[in-house]
Length: 123
Image 1 (spheres, rainbow, N blue to C red):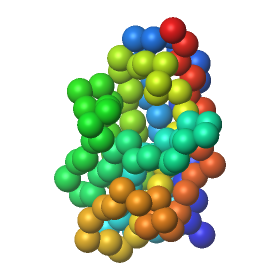
Image 2 (image 1 turned 60 degrees about the vertical axis):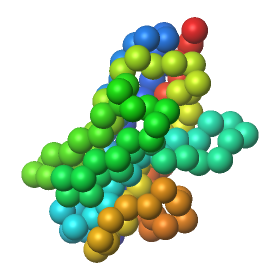
Image 3 (image 1 turned 45 degrees about the vertical axis):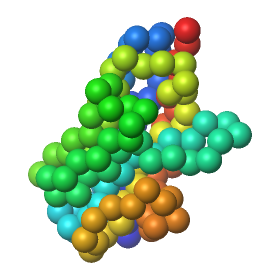
Image 4 (image 1 turned 180 degrees about the horizontal axis):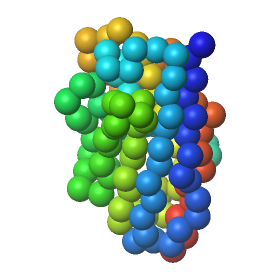
């Protein structure tokens, strides 16, 4: 059974940092696309960053501030968030698609999702 469990969210002031973690189990981690998405109230879910093997992708709105990484031995995905802004406030989700040849920005493409972790940034 595939499980994704996020942790590390919280409340910070603008300019602060957080590191999100996603513990994955139940699938072949090294052949999966792993992504972070976020969804703010009233807005669509949007991709923040993806990682497929050694290929990284970061959305323009987080480039230079957020960094996606993973620990294959621990089967954990991370999102280091620095320079946080109030507009980064959202529920952050870990998503996975197994046995793929790349990643997608479309939420519907991902089969597995975590429950989410809330990030709140105050000004």
